[in-house]
Length: 406
Image (cartoon, rainbow, N blue to C red; front, side, top):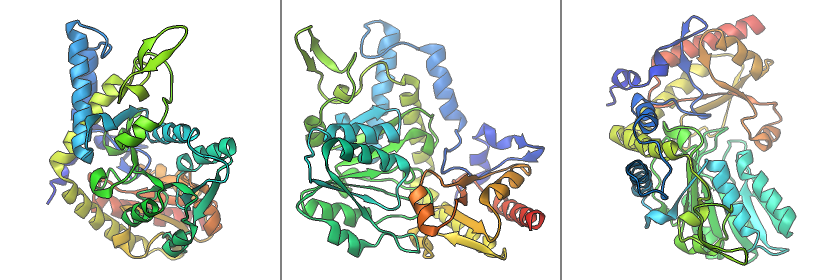
């Protein structure tokens, strides 16, 4: 059992009021809130050992370098990567995906095929479309069902010797669907294709093991899992990271530079040009320590309770439609819904006046909204610091908004 009140007290923002009401923060799918220990890690870096890393022999530089590389080791251990240099610091999930897409520009040929799922965030669609435009590769899509699940029999039909890369999110940000990535990875490997998994929405709720998954690339962002914005990671199998060319040129990613020729640094620095988000990387490690101190099994169990309770409460509202899997064991703690005859934006605007933060719109997943023929949804996404009492407040606010708009 989690001590929720003790946990909530560790998040300063949760004690404030919005529009004169206690904040109810149900927009965790967009970004999580930060515990004091993570905030302190950022302040501590800038207050006590702010310096550039990997370049200085002076004390502050050594302290900063050690803290940054310790964070890399924490991330390696958390995701069970084989080597620390298989963890590449990036600005977040989007840059991680673009890094891989850029690398495959030199690998793909005209007529090669790459496969995406119908449940993707735009950041796991657009870079691959751009890649196809550059290379002549063909983008194919695993379709989805009305229950918001991938139709795996159709995935089987798409796979062939022409398939070079498959990319899919671990959990859908718009619907909360937990995708069968183990099966997706295994079947892709059977035809010799590499696999990239977007874990941005999964990592706040569960603990991926990249070796057990045998995944080629796994990406995520710190800000989804109690860490700061502007930092994330790319895990890549060593064989792929050595094969891909550098993504950016500049300092740190070089071994030697002359005007005639440049040679590149070894992993991971080959992909880490320029001064990184040093305090962000350090605080990312702190956030991972914090979440592990709570326990991911405990987080998953509690958030599932919130999902079940929230789903039952919302179903009390006449005219509500909830999107995504009806089998809640296949779903993370996200409820994406609409109320008949009311635009989701209108609901979101009214309940904001009551201190409740939810996300409304297409959630950077327009193909999903087009599939359901809707302009968007109201999305309530729960974290381990939320409560059933907050869900009650939320549901009553939605009922009030419905009454006002009907």
